[in-house]
Length: 501
Image 1 (cartoon, rainbow, N blue to C red):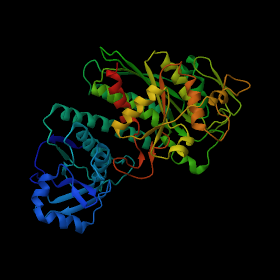
Image 2: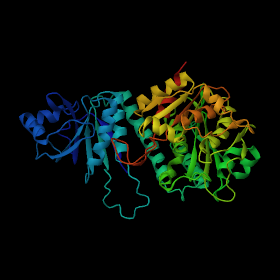
Image 3: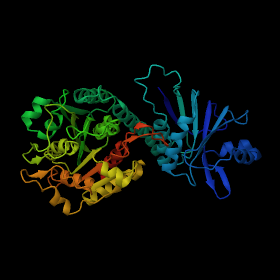
Image 4: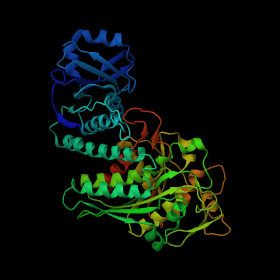
């Protein structure tokens, strides 16, 4: 367990096991970034040759450990690159890289740029997330030393906005970390019923941490309830698995909230592709196909913990897409909640089916805006790579999501829903809509057009996070495996949405 403090202190005189400072590069070499002025003064003329000897470039995330030999109070100085200029994004990434570079230290002082609330947030989130590790299934974790005390040093530490940013950053970081935990959990242990149980447990735990009147309530619909409701998409996708599907619905309704946000997250706990089975190599990361569901749940709980004055209704369809004699077949027709029929042609395009049920349920709560988050299509990864999410939908909502993502430090890019996609999704000869049409081009846009059919014309945006939801290696504050992508964006969106006119 790590304890975080925010204080205005001299890093050269701080008695921590390690002091972390930033390095920025310029045409004339590198210099220490703001926040390290006292360290610069302590080293004096020794600093320039030291930096030259270390051959630092200032590249974001570049780290070097230096014994101080008593020049400053701490025995170890950790230098981390912040690029050409220290910005909230480069500071967040640098702090994350530094967290992995510091080992065998019980206490650390972070003397990174932190002279504004935004930078205080970046330092705190970056360190907390960069040091994340998933060790639940490792017997020997002796080498994983947790830093017990982390001090964020800031000249504005006593200002209310800095304190608020510091405290809220810890809430968001904890939500991202739990999202990562869920995504990293082996799929045999996080089946739909187990995932639903984990969400209910998280809601109960969250209730102990929120102010009165800010609790989240949870309702779980099992397979029998789903049949009674007529949620044919969720039931159809989950039909091939021995682990039955679930639909979890959360409500956060603080007194005085005047705006209402609905969140929907795809919760496919494992995706074999169904009868349209995936190649073996494509299944290795399919435990992450519930990353959207994990993100919307944890964002909802974080919004409640922060006490944001916005009502949130969250819908999480959960299913395991497996192969068996009871699995949905290509050619089958499913009836979505509300009555729309869908012809199935590709059982590996299952996410849109479970989302359809949940989206209709979400619209019935009459929200002002609907956001859905899903690891939906490989097409979006082809288009944008594995670090950027695609955002589609109502233009004004897309713009607001992009603005929130910039504050959160998560990369999103706007994508269109061309008019001709409406023709493609209506190409079925036997049902209202075609789930898939096997046209090679624009599959991610087709999927968004399909989802739009279930939004009742409400302001809506679809976040396709297939690329950035799961990483092969660590970079900055983002660690390998589940990344927790979209949690911070959703929280920042809700924060701005709550006060928008």
